[in-house]
Length: 298
Image (tube, rainbow, N blue to C red; front, side):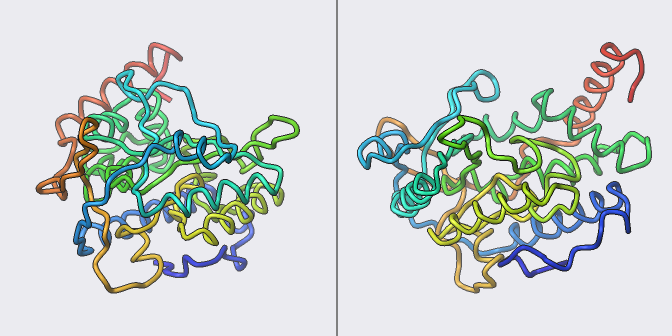
């Protein structure tokens, strides 16, 4: 596994030297190894409260946009980060403003229902399934293989679901002058060989935009999840692994009480959110949707 997460890899193979499918499979395997490291990494939850990013940006006078799309099950999105991350978040957002950009926060804190069902949501599950079928040369994956792929892309345990720790953001970036989204090779929630941060299958412009955005987030104190170009976090097991740290992470999966704004560590965070029967049911339903839509499975 490539542990050099601190910089973009400038020694990437040319896309013509290997196939998109083999690259995708390699990256998904690496991401699974990363998740296994996160599963084992020690966490001592610090108990910090969550802070509303919409209120924080309004008070600071920083221009930030927030996705208004409903979350899975029609639930409202929770634009929350830990109290200790707010200064870093505002720094990154303000720097983007100085560059002529506006950060758009796509997702923040997720509770159990959000994290459990986002991986089963048809638009997400179907995209991942088609990607995995492509990876397998047209074969339908077993529930076990599909679980591995879902784990890397939709965090099938609270321990690896850093959004459930309240310390992660999914972001897009908008050009202030034109109002158009900055080219990063694909929009938020792309599921393909374009998804890894260092994908060689994107344009030089998209690659440079990813590099600049990540540099801003890094300068503020966040790290990028190497296998999704939109995901940034800090203070959790992901950051500790990426920075080769040894001290326990301070943010772990928590329940959040909106009334009191108290966070409580989740018990047994390593347990799967979706069992293999649920994933098998999801595969069958996705194949049926695809067949009804296209008259064939693929």
